[in-house]
Image (cartoon, rainbow, N blue to C red; front, side):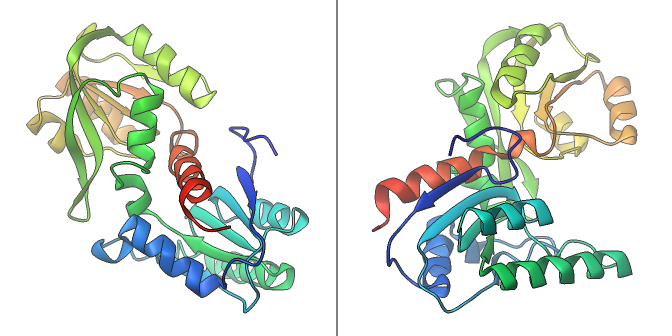
Length: 259
């Protein structure tokens, strides 16, 4: 199955008689160093829904929503790795939706493994490093940037000169979605911050003397502050900037795990 940017189920890989879901989840934890991370309460990194079958087909998606779970069942996926799991939100509606997703996953025999900040931050398999490379900036000087829950999940890049149009075009090509440009800073960008998903901590941007922030989305107050502070923002979409980690983890599993 081809990996298309807007597919609910981004990728599926076959493994015959591999291991049980709990064993595979432990392998993923080790690869991503998940136990070293604090995360937001809704993340609940690790195995969120399980079964006792041997895993034969592994699926990869950004979100554990009804569409992804349903498609996983249709494609005979029995272990679904996602970035956004099923435990976000605490409202009555959130709980009802979560229960529906869990029921569907169990009925279809789909185990769900979620990795949030560990998959953002990983230096080789992470969302942010994947986006950085997709932007064609992998050979430039970089250092960790964008602290969330005590760990840097993005990158600070310098050593080049880019126009906003160039960066927007690069981001649009990388994600398959036209980037939104908030040109509030210099026309020639020299120091870039890259954090996937939704990142709006401009205190960190100012402290690092970054002139251009590339991320997925930002709320309105952040846009207002960016304009007053003279910071460029290039936005590629929350989901669209977070497909890279699941893809890189998929490639790693194909090359390194027994199957």
